[in-house]
Length: 451
Image 1 (cartoon, rainbow, N blue to C red):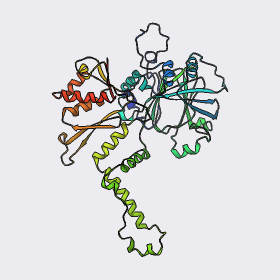
Image 2 (cartoon, one colour):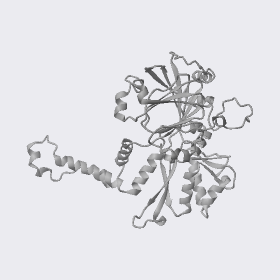
Image 3 (cartoon, one colour):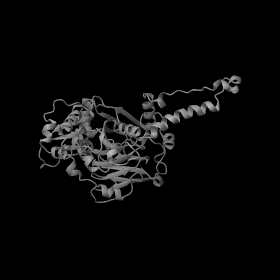
């Protein structure tokens, strides 16, 4: 448990907690400077806070393109959990806005149904939060960051005891919340057997049994942060009204995810190893088949197995093919989005304007930018034989690593904001080609120009 230190990469890395065990850091962030709670009178009207307000989140939850849901339950009864998917209606939105000020501090257990509003992809709709997440968690690879999810809860609200498959940073923005955290990770089989039947929310049963021996409990106040590695069971309960919690999730693909996508790619491939079919030229030479036509022979099973293994091994052993497959896959959108990113053909600022020092180019919020280097000739391992690949939103571009374009790819992937001086450092004498490429990225909506 850290205490009294503002969060930074060195502090977190020195804890050695990543992927291993929970970590609580008190006063990790100065919430008074990050969240507009409408309390400070001396703040200028044009100041854009890095964390969205309660009202901002409710408005986003009302958007048809947002992913939101309201999870409700009767406190103390885990079998009553229910979910209602968004977007919020105008009436529901008005009710949620009033919930912020109707803060109930009564510590008695209220048996009326309590609600929690959960909204994903907040960083896509609120650019300052996207900037903040990228700056605070820049020690985590871009492709591992999922989204900024915010939950708004009434007093005694929560989403129940559950398990996540990914690392998550839980940051208390406003109000207070108690977190009950399991001392041991649980695997998928145990989770499956402990899920409560006949409800639409994944809730673990037996949470209150032997709680003192199996669960630790911490109360988080505004600015506190709790990190949880994957598969650690946890349950958050709002101790006040106006409770806001930001979750920064760090997802990772599972074996089934990768194999499913690999199978999909193979099914669309024209490569010989992918389209090759099972053959048995020696079929009629086996007396066992003639005598027992219903028998699936050991040889048939082995031949079919080798056919699949050969196709998979061919791709897995091809470093270039695997690099492309993995880079495209991990930068794809992690949830369904309609008409996003939005192609930009009428930006007030052009790429040329940015290069002349006016405004900057920005990554479209919620879009993953990553790059890789792949050696094309294994016998000669140096920069002259390598390719730099830029992956954006599941698409790929590649060029020679030693070229100025290769340096441009790396710059684009590493900087959420690309101003003129930053770009000119890598453009070199290849300005015309660089402008053309940047304009292409703007045209498909993954970059946009702004002051």
